[in-house]
Length: 386
Image 1 (cartoon, rainbow, N blue to C red):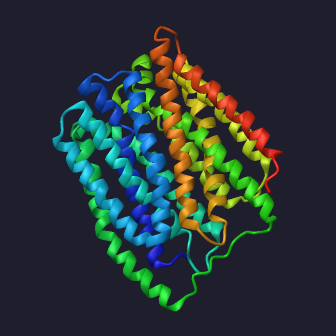
Image 2 (cartoon, rainbow, N blue to C red):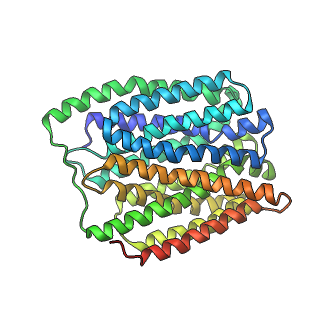
């Protein structure tokens, strides 16, 4: 049974994901329409946020491990609120990029602390806790991307800041209640978490390393796709609202993957599942960015969501399936995401700048990087870990 405190933490997670997607994924539409950013400028902005994400997430996990998850959650939430408030009043391109980086620092304090806190509950199995966590944030993200385009058209582009800010204030109001309930629960119960340690420590470590390696490449793909969606929407003649509806399908597919892999655990410590998911991700990445039609775009998104769902799930589950240092592992899991957030857009932007006239050069350059990553994954499968 999930404790009352845990339910509130899941609610905070849901709200946080909706607010984060509302702001970060549609910031690129705002930059395009307000400051005339093209594909290259949007990719560079995404890369700057990714670079900050690497460092902030790594340190966020260490801080949560050292000072406690609740304290770091407070700091992260207040940082996000401050950044969004600044975004409402600062009206230059450089200021908006700086606001995005400050927001990234705050969000990187929140996610590792939430992951570590949620994955600790006496009497609850780790697959159940991680499964609910994944379904919760993926559901919030999918609904956010589906609705944000329509809301922006109705509420105006400034809602990109004030709506997530209001939602984050709700998180801040919920956190003291969750902390009080957690303190009462911990006074009566042990903090031991049942783990699935059926495999040897060597195999567990190998799969953790491979999942940490693969997950950044999934985010290389994701965060090359997202900044290019405004350009893709323009090519297919989609409005902002319609782009949000059509291009959210992969998020719902990822949500379905999370629900399936929560209930069915046969993929645990099975390399074939990880490798096949990676290959499917590569194929669907090209399908999304190079598609000439709406029907192919929808089909590619389904495969894309399913594949990255298993890759992400592997990274988080293997990170939490340890006896200690869950906070630090959560930070490293998020930092690996940051590597993908940086590398994908940076490579895409470099290709656009170096070969500006080539059709689909950003997709081909990042696709080549994804293929190199698959070769690295195969190597790691047979690499001996001492």
